[in-house]
Image (spheres, rainbow, N blue to C red):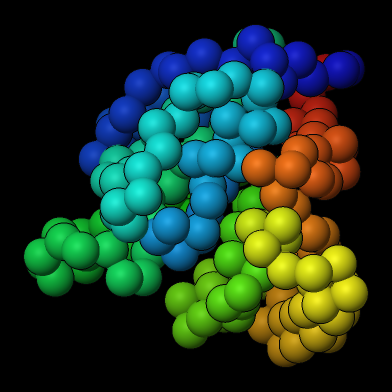
Length: 201
């Protein structure tokens, strides 16, 4: 079925997986380093200005946020990892619940992994790819903020990251993306639709 992404609405925000909505249907999660552009990508893909809250301050997303697409399908915004300016204990707690969500959530069909195209494949990005490969979870990478690089440079980055990330997740796919320039929206929506329709009648 055709997914109407513009109909997405905020469902709930939870600090840990056990408080999440019923583990049924299908959902796709968005993960990435703090300030990689997760919220901007969600807003762009759903054609909404403020579905997900954006901030120039890394670490704004501090809980697991669920967005309802109808027909028991959801998008999930995970806490950013990396350099968030929060106490270490809180950062470790986020990491624990993020890993737990990826490990036990049965309705999870795929992971959209966002990397700033100027700083791809950080240690945390590689760990996320490895976790997903171990869990047999499909991953599609959005190289965000592609508008910050000249077209030729961004294409070189795309080719380089595509080759290098096979060390951690050989089956992962990848594309360039820019929320500002509306680049790559249709391709991203297609991956989401394929996953959200997988096994759902």
